[in-house]
Length: 141
Length: 115
Image 1: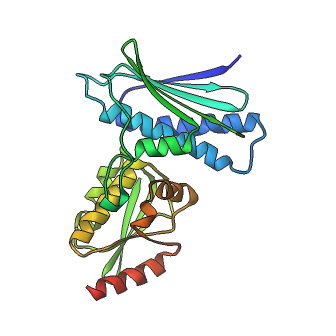
Image 2: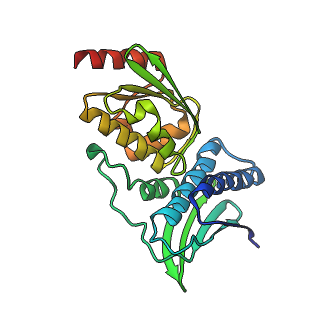
Image 3: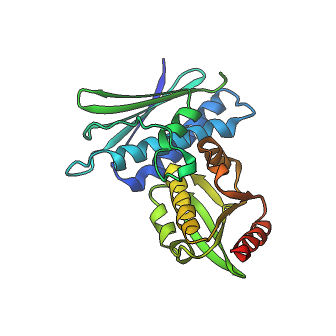
């Protein structure tokens, strides 16, 4: 049976760091339960970075509701895999953006590129009025 | 996040400590040397623990605005976690990056002297 940690945070930008630091700790928990590996820092950093990007996108780039809606983050622990789902009931949004051309110095649009590069899988869906971003990574693929 | 500015000749060294993400970029952009587009800076990232795309965007915006005014934004002392963000996004191709802040200051001084 999978173990799940659920975290619910106010949908405000000041909680992005709390979410990303918690993600790093969850990744470390999986590493410690599996005796780790040489590139442990890349695994913890992947979750720290991807959750920062996803949470920030959720609370700041979506269409704003009248008041910020809470964001629920599930950390799902499997044998050698950690999956994070981020759910909110804000209006629908898309994280799909073309990869920016660095030579034109764009200041935005790197989030999805970073998430997709550091994680094994990233999906974005809308189900029953809820936005769901799901990201997974194997510890030792 | 903590920001300190130190003058080294005509170059300002901007040392960032802590986290540079969506919740802290405004503070960086308000700092005197960053908000002055004509001031060349070396961004000392030795004690920057975490950078995400919002923080990177602030650094890229700073680079662009300063280059429009013939000033420079150089980077020094990135750790592996920050370097990973630069490399995934190819941002390392548009910045001058140094392992040593003094070397970055020397290079920035040469660059600005040519202008």
